[in-house]
Image (cartoon, rainbow, N blue to C red; front, side, top):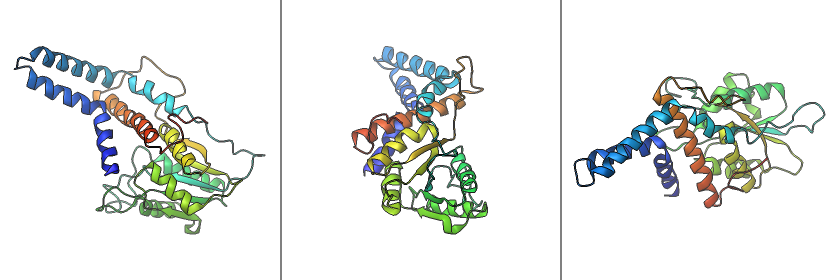
Length: 264
């Protein structure tokens, strides 16, 4: 029930959902004695749609999360790494494995960067954590295993966690499988904008990890004059990042993360 409530809150927290609700309410009210409120809702919803869809507002919202955690220092002279933890979320489960080896989405860098790290450090253990939210679909870990093997990663290096449905379960179930020891260095590979919540969950689970953010959606500098080519482009960016902010707040209130906005 809690999982379903989280998904419902995430859906409502999306600006596109709120815009649709406001437009519907405005249309219904415009023909009643509440027509002034109806007009206000319509004007506000349309203004939000245009400004949010075309302006770089989404980039402005993404940057604080993406820039929160720099990549860990893994250069020469630093303590050796123990392993890599890769969070699911990079697979499009609607298409794979029925149609493709592994259909990937906009967060595919979670996979590609993990493979690059595995080749750079041949002795590292690789842990992939990702289940499924639907009984009709196979856990994401199964497709990840096939993809990693196809890209040349030895199956003996892989550890799969396939029961988790969200980031908190990623952390708790992975900690139970890995059982990290003091002094070990584990890199956490996930999207840069998702890293604060992920780090907070692993800290709460008692699993110290070091950030290796990927899947950046903004550049190093903010361009206030950058406009999106279409309203759906900008609105999509605002939708996913507002879901992430809602996730940070919700996880903190539920005690699933170590802080509201975890710091390095």
